[in-house]
Length: 286
Ligand code: PAF
Image (cartoon, rainbow, N blue to C red; front, side, top):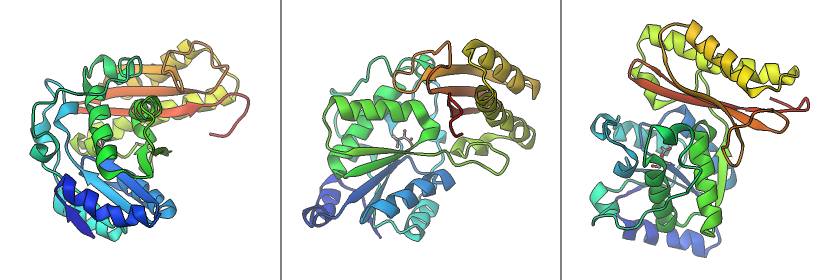
């Protein structure tokens, strides 16, 4: 496995693979890699001849009050894991390499960046879209992999790629969960034992909403109220939102008469957790 720090080197390193028509997959990350990331890498390995992981803590996507300096940095662990999971390349540039000058050009995916997490994380999705656009332009993968846990991010990136005709396939991969259902996240490390046991209420509430829809429930407002109650019942929590949204537009859905997604953001102590599940209609799976 090769660890590459510069844009020029990563372009050079991947050129032969591309020229030979070997399918290149990219898994963009901010490091602190965990089971969720490994599932993306494993998925990439199944369908790509060459897999690259990027590790870059992107300053553009951190807002005021979101401390980039305390974001976990575990490079040694990350590189060992990447090697174990069969990555050929790790692209781990410095902020100076990625942003040598003041950023004058950025990517805004309007409408999709403002609901849900966009309401409190102003500028976050512009930062994400901009860095992902840069990473895709630098690595030029055939396919890039993102987790469904960050569902809004996935929708924003898909739309960016479509609107800008970027020649890359975007693959969304299912959320990896702890045995009790909690979505795996680097932010889970901030939970103390009590918060950890209560945080499972998020996935439990989502699962209950899925079951309710399977049994014929279709009133989103009712489903949201039930989910909020389920999460609050577990003890102190700061619910940022529970919403049911359209899969593509992320607009609020009132009646579940088509596939929709329930999305939750809630804070347990300093850990801001997000999760979501698809709500299917018509007796479908999940
Ligand atoms: O999901 C993440 O880790 C980041 O938002 C991403 C996609 C790597 C962009 O910095």
